[in-house]
Image (cartoon, rainbow, N blue to C red; front, side):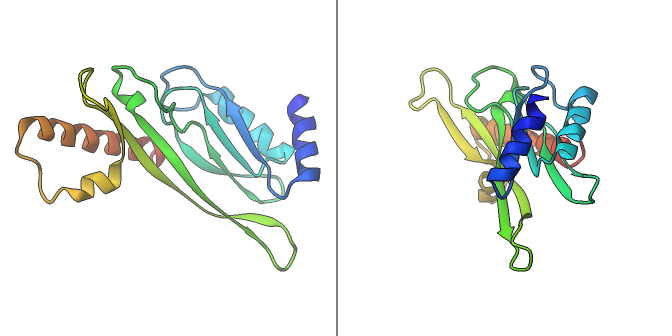
Length: 174
């Protein structure tokens, strides 16, 4: 009932309604049935976009249609940013790039495009200063002309490559 009231209020006072959800079980790489069903309800209540977090892991993204046939983008989890654990999946985050356009014909705001930047929290160890570096995975991997030959850099390269493959499997293949 609260979501219904808040979305209705937002629709009266904003051109585009983004619902931010704090949901999901910890360390889950796919949204649960409860979350996908709740996303369906939020779509029907009028959300234009839904972005979630809390699972510590990146989760799938999808486009849902509301009863009027309008597309609604859902990102179940973008990761957890700055979570320092030994779990490799918590070292991966997403930054969403969202483009909205206001129509000249009807004055409504529409989601034009969504993309994401995969980020990797490289941990250089407790004695390193700085300890962490946040890297755009695609850009960093593209910067290598070939697979590194130094053992330490080869390990980092493989960690980043594995992380990017995992993200693409979850986000695109989810």
